[in-house]
Image (cartoon, rainbow, N blue to C red):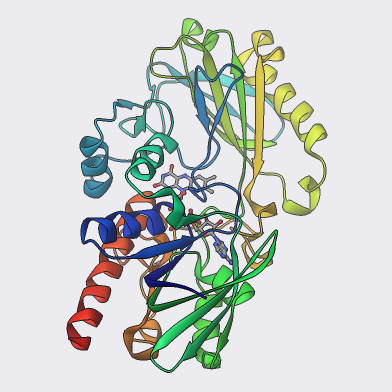
Length: 364
Ligand SMILES: Cc1cc2nc3c(=O)[nH]c(=O)nc-3n(C[C@H](O)[C@H](O)[C@H](O)COP(=O)(O)OP(=O)(O)OC[C@H]3O[C@@H](n4cnc5c(N)ncnc54)[C@H](O)[C@@H]3O)c2cc1C
């Protein structure tokens, strides 16, 4: 049994932010992460040679995201505004296209040079490597006297951990679907966890990279709204210096129609880009496709239907002070103010730290 003060389940932004603060406090922690990489929903994929990375998960932060801005400042990260000069392309349900609409839907949103993962890279650099356990999928959490015991499945078999407190920094639905608690959590609590939709979990995103952002020369900003699809919303994803061009789009095709059909989706995406932006879009130099609905660490079946509205997030009251306060919840979906967003992942990490500190004070 490997011992720590705090075990953090989930090495996404929220779990890593908790680890970062516990490190500053000189506490002993371990992160258990199911995937073979950190960062969770944050994923910035490099093109060959690694000159640029493109965001397959989150792309933007906003000027009101104070924690995100402070984190970027702390690590000296360069921010730049979403490219917004030029017209938006609109495609109606018949496929007809117009290019005379002078607005951009994401003007003022901010991007991080090198992709959102650059923030995680910096965060992780300050954390001891041996405490970040990848390929550790937690499936059982057991309260034993005043300790919490955790079992994680690894490629080499099951590994046990024990701690005074535990931070669950993963989507509530994933907790409810994949982790067994002993003693069992009351049914009402499991139901409350299942009711919290995971933000963007049902989405798929495609990115096409080009030698240059050719649409800018045609007076287009790279935004498109389509009622035909397969992409319903498209944006410029080029790096800050515009040395190569990139367009990304959210796929509107249903999970049933897109699962297992990645190469057809690629063909349909490029065909649509040609309809919207012209023949230069026919020959991308790189293409990325990420279907988050197919990732069991992010989505459950309940997330397959994309959300029409941003849900009212926050900590369900029944989750407070479970197991005498030793079971602490983090993750973007329990944030009161910025639920679902990157800012919410940091907000929830801050709240988890407050809970851990008061647990420690009660024990003293
Ligand atoms: C396509 C897409 C676009 C988005 N766009 C934006 C945007 O532009 N701006 C914005 O602010 N937000 C956006 N978001 C939301 C943003 O990505 C999240 O708010 C944020 O990344 C959540 O971080 P987190 O640490 O709370 O959760 P996660 O990143 O989901 O981290 C949870 C971690 O737990 C791990 N895990 C799961 N199960 C287990 C288990 N059993 N044992 C151990 N580990 C486990 C997962 O692998 C993961 O690493 C977007 C999300 C997606 C998918």
